[in-house]
Length: 167
Image (cartoon, rainbow, N blue to C red; front, side, top):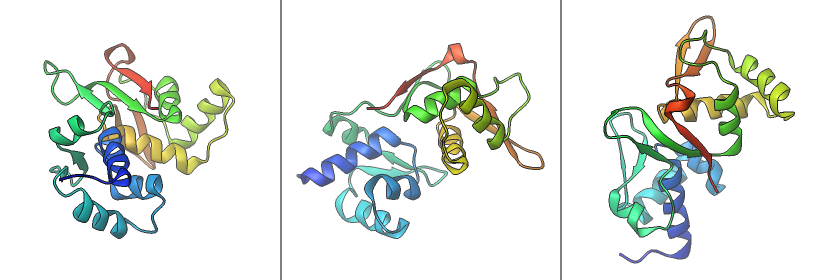
């Protein structure tokens, strides 16, 4: 199956962002709805993606070989479940830098937002921070603890994972 230029670029996004959700691809692709994302995946990329047990979108091994993009997540075969390297947007790299470690008390989105402002002199929207935390959670880098509000901390020590800015 030969892919159009647009389909190849979008497949590269799936490879880079995996595991991902319709909403993340909707934002990246500038589509109106998650339904449009689903239709595009089914019609154009059906042979190159699948949904895992948690209904997250992942690229097939063939897809990763087809596009010249580093996968967004790499796992150490010795340490199942925990990635050894992730490639994420710059805001998510900054979140990992300021977020509480695995042995520390988890933090709210607002707490992480304030830490980002203090450490990096950036002013992201709270929703962007929440979305970044949830994306890192899906990748296995962050864990959530539900208290009065959801709170977050790293799932692994900083020295156990390489977090790089995706191009």
